[in-house]
Image (cartoon, rainbow, N blue to C red; front, side):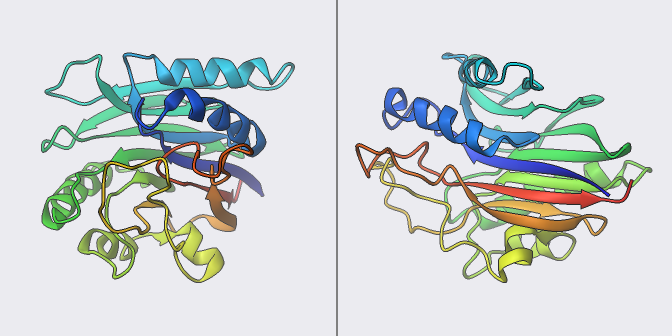
Length: 254
């Protein structure tokens, strides 16, 4: 068997005292060391993704380094913000899908686990909470894109879905009809919340789980849980982001 560790984190771009949060992101990324991580709300003006990859690579002498691929939101300034996927394992392709509404996008990258190809999809769906149908429409568009690939590769679909797990929104039910949530498969339930932390003082929407790692049937889920969930030692109100991250350790037949 071969395995891969994947993760997801919404970075909250430069908001919420990024200068204080940035060292926590690097420390906890070094501790977790996922093979692949999907990032959302990456600030392109700060070159946030490149900075993160360089900082953690400095701490990995003699080990595989991270490379990063970005995708920017359409219909906005290209220098504003987008999503990105960082990887310590080689990738064989990178495609970007415009979800066609509300400047939302998805990345699909092809990797190998034990010599067998698989796709990892990173996305960030529409907000605010009441936009349930808009998120379903975006997911249907994304899933149709994946279905057009005749190879039907094992898949990991992760990111900030902006859809509450409890009670499960239509977008969550749509995904769970086709895929398994890694955290739920391991723990029997979704986390109590992945959003928000004390970093976010701007949005008064209800706390809850908005972030997921969904996997196709070919994967064995060995472990899964929260990540980027430790506050600063000197200040319990400072977290790496306004979101908590997730990770999963997945196994695939070679």
